[in-house]
Length: 117
Length: 375
Image 1 (tube, chains in turn red, blue):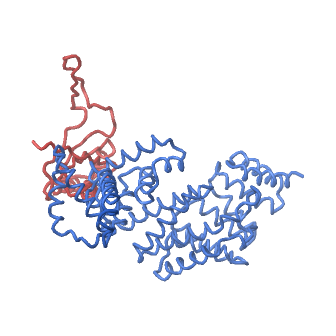
Image 2: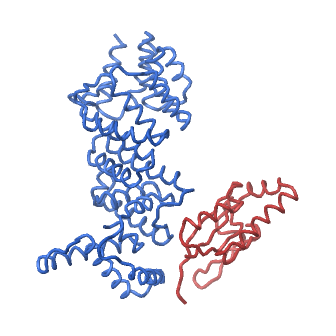
Image 3: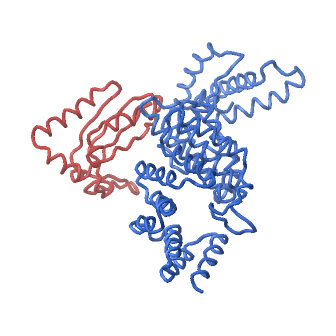
C-alpha cells in the first residue's frame, strides 16, 4: 500500500529549527535525507513556505487563483514522503521518525488510492 | 470463525457476507449429506471459497487483486481439519489507535461480542442508524488505511495491550450502572483475553478487577437506596465471582504483575476482607497514584488514609486536590468534614455534591446526609 506522509509544520517547528544552530541544522537535514533513502520511500520533497503557495479553483469554467495556501492554518504543509509499506503500522513507524513530528509539528498519514492504470 | 475470516480477507463486510453464505450452505447441505466430521473447519473452508468466488467476480478494485494474490498462495496450505483462532488479532485490530475510541468500543462489541448494531446503540444511548454509520466508517478505515490484522510486535505490545484493556474496562464501566449485558460482555472479553494471553499479568489483573467489582452488584442497592461499600451486606456478594477474582489476582501476582489493573484488583480484593486492612489499601492507592498521577486516585488515597491514619490526615490530602466540579470530591470532603464536626462546611459541600449528582439513588443518599448536618 502507498501512503502519503504529509508534514505539517508551523512557526513553532521553524523556530526550533532555527534555534539549533548551524551544526544542529545540518544534522537535522541529514535525518530528513536519510529517511528519503529508506527502502519503500518513493519520493519526498521539502516545500517552500505556505506564503509562496497559490490556490487554484475553477468555478463556472473560470480559473480562480488566490494567493496563499488553501487553508490559513498555522500548521502549514512543509513537505511530504511517499511511502510504500505493508500496512498502516509501518507507515506510522516511519512518520514517527520524521523530525518535525517531535518538534511540535504533526504528520498526516493518508493512504493513496491506486488506480491500476 | 469471523475472526479467522476477517484475518484471511482483511475486510469485515466481506467476512460477514462469507460467513452468512457458509451458514446458509450448511443449512441446506448438512440435513441432506450429513454433518461433517469437523463442522467448524467445513464452515470456514466453505466461507473462504465463497469469498474467493465473490472476489474473482468483482474485478474493479486493485486492492482486491492484491487479496487474490494472497488467497491463491494460501489455498495451497489450507488445512481441511483446522483453522487458527484469530480472536487476538481481531481484538487488536478493533482497538487500533488509528480508530476513534467510540469506534474501537463499537467494533469490539460487534466483532468479538457479536452484539447487533441496535444492541450496541441501545447500550450507548445512540440511535441504531448512527451506530451503523460509525461501524461502517470504522470498517472502511481499517480496509482503506491498511490497518493490519495482527498481534502487534513486541515493542508496540505494551501500549497496544493497554489500549485493548482500556476498551474492555470502559465497556465494563458503561454497564456498571445497570446495563448488565455490557458488564457480562466485558467479562467474557476479559476471560477470552486471559485465555489468549495467559502470560500477561495485566490481563489477569483486569479479569480479577472486573470479577471482584461485579461480585458486589447485588449489595450496592437496597430498596433503591445506595449502600456504601463499608455498609454492604457481604452475604449478598457473589462468592463464586470473588473466588474466581481471587484466583485471577493470584495468577497476575505470580507473573509479577504490578500494573494499574493488578493494583486496582488487589485493592478490590482487600475490600472483601473484614476487618479491612486500610493501611495496605492506602499503600496500594499510593502506588497507583505514582503510576497514574491521577487526582481521582489521590482522592481515593485520601479516603483510605482517613481510615488508616485519622480523618485529619485524610482531609489534608483531599484539601489540596483541584477537583472542583467533581461530584465525589465534594461528597468526600463533606463526609470528612462531617466526621470532624465541622458541620457548617460539611453542609456546603453536601449541597455542592447534590447539585452535581446524576442518579436518584445518589441524590437520596446526599439528601439524607444533608439533613444530618442541618439539624
